[in-house]
Amino acid sequence: MKQLVTFALLLCGGISFLSAQADAPDGIDRSLPEFSFSELDLAGEMHFLASDYLAGRRTGSVGNEIASEYIAAQLRAYGYAPINGDSYFQPVPLRRIAAPEEGMLMVGETKMTHGADLLIMRGPAAELSTNVVFANYGWVDPETGHDDYEKLDVKGKIVITRPGIPGDVTQQGIFKGVSDKPALAAERGAVAIFELYQLPFPWGAFKGYFGGERMGLDEGNESAEIPYGFIKVDDDFLEKLQEKKKGLPGKAMSTGMRSEIIMSQNVGGILEGADATLKDEYMIMTAHFDHVGVGKQGGGAYTEQDSIFNGARDNAFGTISLLAAARAFAEEKPRRSIIVLAVTGEEMGLLGSKYYAENPLVPLEKTIYNFNTDGAGYNDTGAISLFGMGRTGIDEQIERAAAAFDTRVIGNPAPEQGLYDRSDNVSFAAKGVPALTFSPGFADFDDAIFKYYHQVTDNPETIDMAYLKKYCQIFTLAARLIADRDVRPIWVEGDKYQEAGKKLYGTRK
Image 1 (spheres, rainbow, N blue to C red):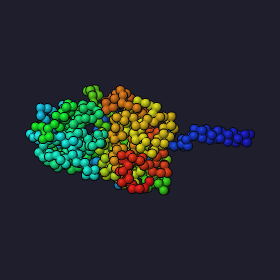
Image 2: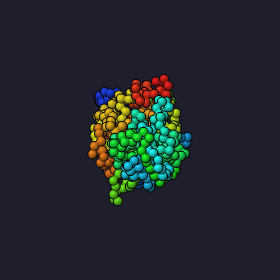
Image 3: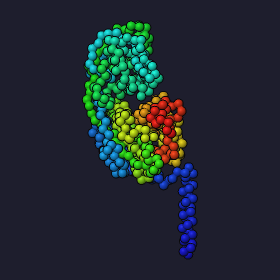
Image 4: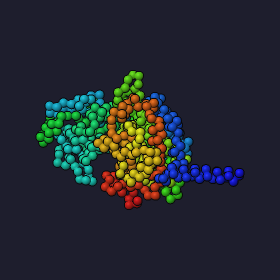
């Protein structure tokens, strides 16, 4: 009898072993912590991070600070080392900016008014009466020899330019122009500068985003030296301006930007890798935890009954995924070391990730990859989306992770939106770190996306919690597979960030 029992136990064990093997033809270990995530635990986190109590988590707000403390507490509980000495926080100094109360620009017979067809975004109070000239992009780049002012006298004049910088009208190019164009014009004697609005998204949305309260990294100066902004004009405006080599007569007036210094913070922790030969290399995993706040701050429609932009999809979804991965890695370490970084200020212009990339707490040359998670929402729960697919050599790992949970991968959806350059991954990519953004499943922006994107309707009750669980599982497994690779990911040949990567890492593979 004892022999029969022993044989039966061995048989059951054999069946169990064979079953486990059959479940993993791809070689993925399904005993990893990510395969046992709890939907209820994740739902609980969603109902807290996207609750009315946090009031939309606007950068610099009390709700934003509470969210950062929550994230730090989780990392501490999981056993992550503080990222900044003995602190889990990286202070991020910001300048909060409000638009002028009044402004006007007249070019020839065309008059534009701030808040309508003129948007003043930077600069002091001014009242000007002078000529208006066209300066192409208003851009100067000593490295390429590009100089739009080389044969143009703009001293004492108002300058009009094309939007963005040469060859780049993505969000990154626009922000680069906002940051640098006023100084380039002022250095050459211009008294104001305005860009033509020729961008692939609605003027109203652009005004709502940049015309309300804004923030930027505090770099010690309150604003631009001269008035700067965008104008929305008819198609023949530029033709009329270009016809006059000396420009058209013009006037400009602004009551000036209003600004104040505020503080926010990134939150991070470090987990040492399990492989002695690879633990000195780090993969940084990021998600932004801020959202857009309450009422007019949010930029969308709201009512007296509901004015809180809770940001369940954008980006409590990603923050929860980041914490899920952090917990799983604490239970079963990857080969490489992991930096978990929740960043602030994404909605204000990628500010937290930009600040970290400029002031890294682990040297960027030791940071082999940025795996970012962010999204506007989802309309396909049978898929995840990937911004940066085909660019850094990790597609196989993403496909394997998705397949392990019977999910498809949608590569680079809505290309006309330039989404790769509109999330925190680009702050690292610009420095040369291979990077991508992992996002909930969608193929294009449709009504299902816009119903919730930056709307007060984006509440926890509207989230498919089973999909949130699956998303966290795929994100975590994909991150593990990337961190466990024998070789470091690198930019594919010819990628626009490849040269930055070579500069950062040298010839090392």
